[in-house]
Image 1 (cartoon, rainbow, N blue to C red):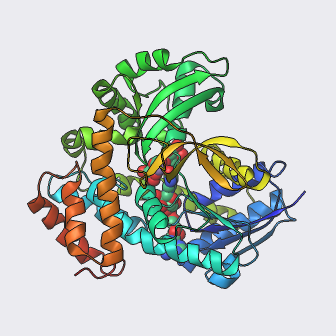
Image 2: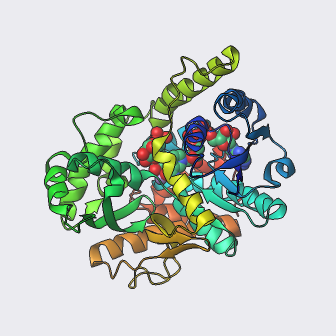
Length: 441
Ligand SMILES: NC(=O)c1ccc[n+]([C@@H]2O[C@H](COP(=O)([O-])OP(=O)(O)OC[C@H]3O[C@@H](n4cnc5c(N)ncnc54)[C@H](O)[C@@H]3O)[C@@H](O)[C@H]2O)c1
Ligand SMILES: O=P(O)(O)OC[C@H]1O[C@H](O[C@H]2[C@H](O)[C@@H](O)[C@@H](O)O[C@@H]2CO)[C@H](O)[C@@H](O)[C@@H]1O
Ligand SMILES: [Mn+2]
């Protein structure tokens, strides 16, 4: 059985250890001969790599492991790139979130002006590693979940139309895990779902068990009262900010009880509520820096110092097992049914065929085949037309270095009240992103 060679792009990511643990847990169904880390921050990556070297030695010493900042070394002789870079890291995420809040506008990682700013940084970073992959391993696939996935997906569609890159998101998976718990099912895989939207901007329309029984009524009954909140949320979803997000799904659901919403829609339906309950001096970025980032790096340093994983609190990133599902689908032509961000091309017949939509796909050796989700109602169509125009304007602004188009993109976002506020936010974002964005004219 072929053993695969994988490069993790963004080796210093807080998600890297959990993903490595998940990959080592799944070697029987996805054998690996080599793992390489690539990052442009050597010191950050080295801390994660020193710990992962111990983990790999303990659990699968036959795997060749290295960490590098050299592109040729990182991207030569590989089958897959698992990409999760954060251009500008959390320091810039904090600015993405706090600058809009200065003007009473939603400050969020991937939504609104913060997501637009993040997109303007991410496009160059993702294209760069994609070009490295194609230069040094032309037959490899990139499984990308660097955010903002919607803008990155549109950029790779437009600027690298022939590249072997799959853009993915784990929010629907996270919500489906909650749905399975609400239904008392062992796993989200016990459900067959129909879903459409843009990334972080979508709706479930049909959810059935393997006998074809409709599960939507029971889910709607729960969501109508409690959103996706459970008695007990686990892991990082135990954070109050996540629990509040899951509870808010109740108000988002109320706007269209025919569907079940992605939690991110709350930023577009109730932006003022989000601003009202966000501390402009301590946003999600601060919570993550004080929480996940501190935890992961302290655990990595402990493992590296002690030379053992014994007593470590690092956990397998179970939700990331969809990454193995995706890699296996490509490698073994499994025809797995998965939600991916793909060019519409008629999957939603009454929507822009060039839009990057999030729909169920059958995935095999040649990549994804989108499943037609049918025509969508006027309400969702109107929302998506506006949002996809924002995403497309951002990519055009990046490509053309256009101040005007970026101002239009921010003005067009449902989260921004008017063009004057949009310009104030844009000018502040330009100031702090000088080393990351193309110069705008
Ligand atoms: N698609 C999804 O649903 C999903 C889910 C979770 C996380 N993410 C994304 O995964 C990424 C990682 O998240 P995190 O919180 O671990 O971030 P992080 O800041 O901890 O790690 C990101 C790493 O990327 C590196 N990096 C930044 N720019 C780079 C470049 N140009 N080339 C190479 N490396 C570069 C950084 O140095 C850092 O080590 C983010 O983009 C995040 O939004 C996406
Ligand atoms: O605020 P963060 O950095 O904790 O999370 C932002 C990301 O949230 C989603 O990913 C979740 C995922 O949905 C959930 O199942 C769990 O695994 O944690 C992930 C990271 O929190 C979203 O899909 C990502 O795009 C966001 O970056
Ligand atoms: Mn996501």
